[in-house]
Image 1 (cartoon, rainbow, N blue to C red):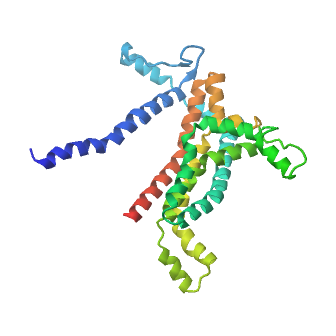
Image 2: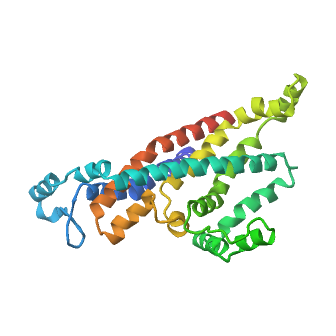
Image 3: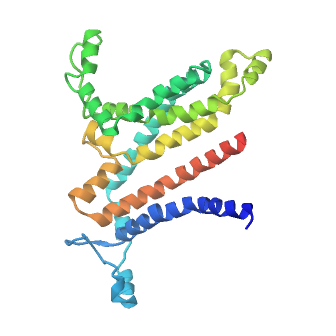
Length: 304
């Protein structure tokens, strides 16, 4: 057996490994969730019918299959609770992503302009928060934003406010938590794009009479759009389904879809409706996921 054949088999197995992973840990669980979403709520364990029992034969399987219904999906588009939850999730995700872009772009741009020996240190400072538990970081913000927390103490000491400001259980607190938590996801793709830009292009723009501001908008920003798109989608997609931050920091006036899913699953015990909401959320995120994949492929193609 030749050496080429010996090394070809491990390479072939490595190539199919991602597909096996997707089938086992995405498609199969999604199939269970999809089946539950087409079932009916029941006071039982598990709390839905029908149940598929392959040991009872094909006829029993067909009978159970005939009981599946899309009524739960019809409920999603007719009940204002779910419509408002999806709309609020999208609005929050879009708003937070724009804030993240406004904050993350200057930071990434500054990192890319640093001397080479300082750039790894700057990247390390961005990544360091990931070394702490996500829940611990969010609970730390509860202490910072509470009535007698650090933020109000600083504002009072600087005489910027005359009385403590109410931060907790507001949308402002939620946006602070989201921006803090997802800022590295915006900075890193932007930095990766900006760090690869050819500096001679800016020199050529200056030679042609462009001011630094004009060179930025005509050269730097257009060339960084793949990083902008990747960072925006990398933040937008998980923020839509965010549960922990809105639940701990935001008010209870209106819920995002992640909180609605939790309510249906664990409080109302309505698994079929919750599963339908989860499937609808996934379908809502498919276009951004495809767009993100396309941007990644284009960026890799450009660098290759």
